Length: 282
Image (cartoon, rainbow, N blue to C red):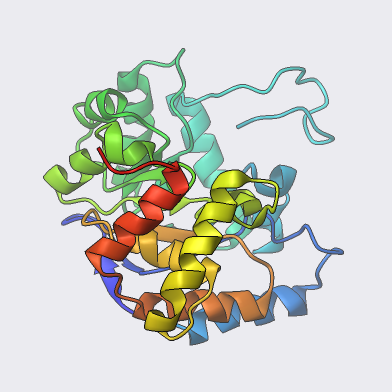
């Protein structure tokens, strides 16, 4: 599997990233089962792991070694964002403790906090960088203007923007975020590449059109599956997005790894675009 440096001052990541948002969903997996899953990823060349303090309602990081009401925070009544300097530092230090490491290669601000100034957020990130607790910093779900503003306060530039991008969510093509990544030489990450399963929903008209298109194209691509086409479609964009896998099934991880071998012809990429949109290109 290819590996890419996501920015000139950023880490080197595998072409696919393994996401851990739902790793505890299936019948309380044992540490041995989780270890087998992670080692399978490594054997396939998927050496980048995406996790977050909030995943699994604050339990995922502990299993691996946005603040919402839950048993850990019973006094919280409303889910909210907090990207203040103090909160970022506290969250990062907690993550390091739970993950059993001295640093992480990349630390992302999960979502923009409308009530925290960019200067305050940057202060926390700059502190973590200077302390060596994070090797690089980035953001998730930031628009172009939010990214530019925060980046202007950074002592070391941001290295990525993690965005929702898939056949049923194409905004990064239109809202300037992918263009910004290309301009700055950053590789974005694509979360929910299978649209949280909606690509396989037989009641979803767009999903049905996409499936029909894939059925037509598959013989020319070694009979690749809908899932593999979905990943390949994302990776074909010149911004070179890195898809984040969300499956707990070993066979699907192996299947996803095979998608890196697919080289979509431009006409076929646009055919999938038209199927998803239900209309011809402009």
